[in-house]
Image (cartoon, rainbow, N blue to C red; front, side, top):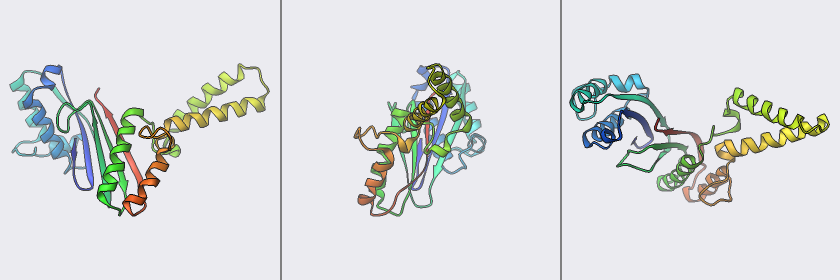
Length: 225
């Protein structure tokens, strides 16, 4: 993971064993690759082709050299980058193995002209929430249609087995779909930090400290493997 003023990036680099993952040379390579990724569009191809931070070879060639030195295969598997025009991209690494390193990384992009410190504070809390709950999307509209349709089909079949009239079955399905969205959509989830507010309301409440409106522009949760 690497973080700039208004952007941040997550990359996943796999090794064959935990022994290598704990190797200082490997960890340094990952940090340098992440720092390099911050200056690209965040795609794996762009990162692999870029000259690695603090070196004169590409990330891909540096990784190849490390494989030869360490004697174990390593792969730049995936990457994600978020940025905002004004505001912050907050980060959180769960079970950190070192600075910027861990098995679950989260980015949360908040667009605002408000106080950077206040934005970073609520952003990190939301990122911690995302690490814990693994939401499917930020808003209901962003839930993939095939996922929503699959859930509705399951609930419809279950409700139909009750033998109740069609209008009751439909109400049962709608109720279960509301619960599905409440549990799966980030802004609709109960904020784990206080156990009461919805995430959307928690962000709204933070606008007072920030001194300006705050808009959630996106999030990324990346778990190793």
